[in-house]
Length: 278
Image 1: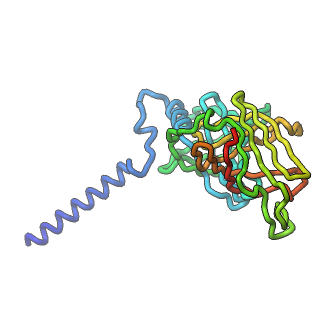
Image 2 (image 1 turned 90 degrees about the vertical axis):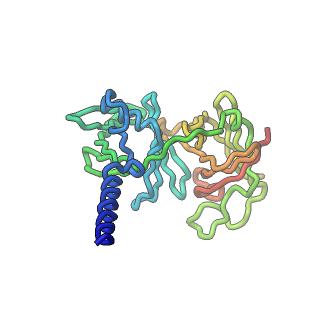
């Protein structure tokens, strides 16, 4: 009898613990609206949440794009799109929130005046879902908090040169790169203190030069390039170089090289090893 009673007490206690875990879920769910200041409006809570972290989606079946959203307080949204062949491209958008019948909606627009996109925001345990009001398409993003970074502008400024063969040794004719190494191949990036940059890459017989402005993302993991050399379109995406490791005058970063109409001087998305000249 005592053994049966003890076993029943054990089951009740186990059930209570499981129920408590399911109710709170504080170790698993992001209960932002419940945990933040109750005096804040739903818009203020949602804005604080969007600004507090980075929002990450996985690969899309259609185009194999890894995407990250970084919201900034000045109303600018940076959308990082990484593909296997075009490196990391960055779209600049404008964002704002609106409250309608107790729901929070995200309004996005491009850099130039044009049609706005409207999304209904729903919080999930791992992040959020955005439902496009016009198309009904549902986008899911995981939340990652922004951690303090040791990367400073002074650490990045200077001339960085690739310490490896920068291009690709192609295996097929439809791949970027050459079937044999190019003599004198090089890849240099100069980051000036005034926010300007110059990229140079090529070989002994052909050199490509790109100029523009650069900045560091708010998480300190990306160097963002705004190419001023190409005047084709003011809406062209920015490019980014993802910092994997920075140690003094050594830099390992993920990006790509793209030479228009010359696949021999191009790469897919890959890691580059740099050393600092000055």
